[in-house]
Image (cartoon, rainbow, N blue to C red; front, side):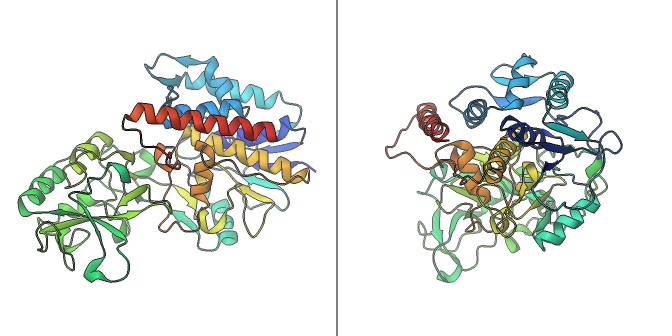
Length: 438
């Protein structure tokens, strides 16, 4: 019986391709050209909606490392991207129409893949991979919600994440309010002068342009979001002291440098069990990325912060993967049902495609009655798959590839590029061993 793959975006195409390369029949469902999401315009598969860049090429980078892993796993995306690249400095960018055409041609000419052009409105029975993206059609999203309970999220805003090692802990400190429980938060204390400088830069910072299909949810100055998802810059514009009575309230905290309560405190909370990544609590934002780097670096202790993910604000349907998925991208309660792409909480083109590769590979092994083998967590794809399935993760938000998700090296390397190269070499060596073991 053919495996059903829903969605012919990057993840769906990669999943279908992996299954076909392992000799399995695939029915690939795609609602285009009969129906389009608000973001899609081109009838081809693997349409790149926003940028035409697949991020950095150099191996000593998270994106470069992930792309090399994809190549070694037989990625259709990378094969096509390498054939239609355009000049983009140190990044891999593509002619998006040619890229889509190449992927579409490869998929349609594959004897093992049958393309079915129709909208799927409910989750099929049997072996299935759902890869419908962040703009999943309403009826299918409702049925996914039925299966996942209340674990299907409509993602309005997310806060930035920084690496722990880049936080200046000579200024910041671990503590919980009033000393209750364990010291779970990193606190960045500010005096009045520091706070006012940050406040003034924040309210005058430049916001990102909203996509047309998001404007029905957000207006320019009055964001129609849950109060808990209010962008920090919008909250700040309500008054000079508003943040100090909200996410920056200093009550119950004492700055060990002064033995006094700070004027304001920015808190950071661990994003993963290893404690290598911290999100800035309450800092959901729609500021442009360079503005986030400039303004948030004014926070005491974050002057040299390494931003692993910037805050974003857009429509994004995704499941609460840590509560639902295994590291193989299938449901714990329904193993024959896999998810792939941005719906799982991986964010970005190559991350989505990579998740499709691994979901397809695991589905093939399941059908063949072979055990599923986890990727080493020293690989970028392995680390991402463990992040999205880590049951210890609270307040789950989508994550793109970054060096912060990888386990630390046993030795400390001060030079960042040297460290990243060692991390990449370690991960690729582990991947080669994994592939040989298959």
